[in-house]
Length: 113
Image (cartoon, rainbow, N blue to C red; front, top):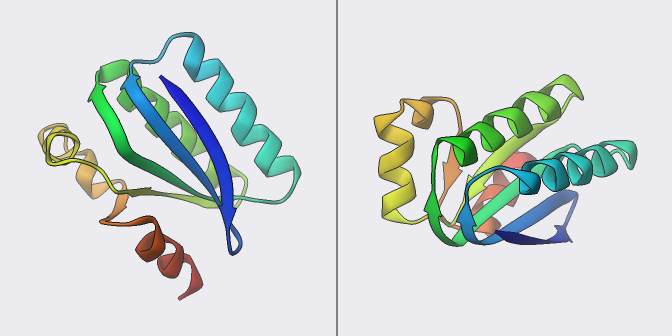
C-alpha cells in the first residue's frame, strides 16, 4: 500500500493505492494523521479509488483513523471506493459507522454543510 496526501478546501485527502492490509503502513498512516492534527486539519477524506484489496487489518486502520480524528474534534469520510470495498463495509456492519461518498468532491461538500 502507498498513499499520497493533498488538500481540497479545508479537507486533507489521503489517496490510497494497492492493497490496504495494515502492518508498517498503519504506522505511517497514524503519523500522517497526527501531523494533520498538529496543523489543525482534522477533516480527512480517504480516497479508496485505487485500492485493489483490503483485509481486516486494513479495516482496523480505518477504524483507528476515525477514532483518532474524532478525538481531535474532526471526522473521516470515505470516498471513491469500489463495490468490493462497499460490500466489505456492509458485511462487517461498518457501513453504518463510516460516511461514504462516491467522489472526493462530494465528501468535501459534506464537510461544508
